[in-house]
Image 1 (cartoon, one colour):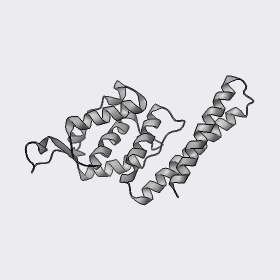
Image 2: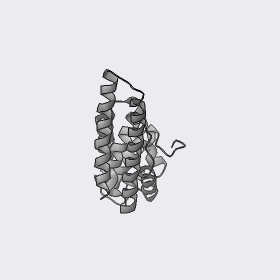
Image 3: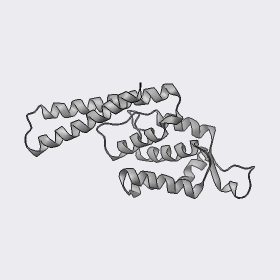
Image 4: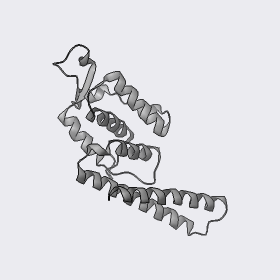
Length: 175
């Protein structure tokens, strides 16, 4: 994690895998495919993002193969208690602004797995994301106040409208 409690790219991948395991046991290859598909769908194909091995999670004790299952079920991988704790830590991390590819992935993962957090943590995450969008909007408003003109000014207005829509949507989620 960065000093500001935001996720580094490998932690975003870890969040994707642990979040999926929080939903239940899954075959290892299916887990790898789901993580790769989700990440690629959000930020496009990226070898940098998919380099960390899911096998490392097993070595670190965050996931394991069940021992008392049939041979077919032993292909599955399940989350451990330590994995659950790491999942919560990753899910309750901050999101770095301005929004870049990694931030976009982290926001998507938080929204994907938000329902797995308790009510208080869910509310804190939605409030944190709302604050992030407010600061992004303020940053662009300050930039626009420099009397920018032309296509760049049009683009800023477009970006600000998108941020405002996101901000409204996130604030509605805390009702």
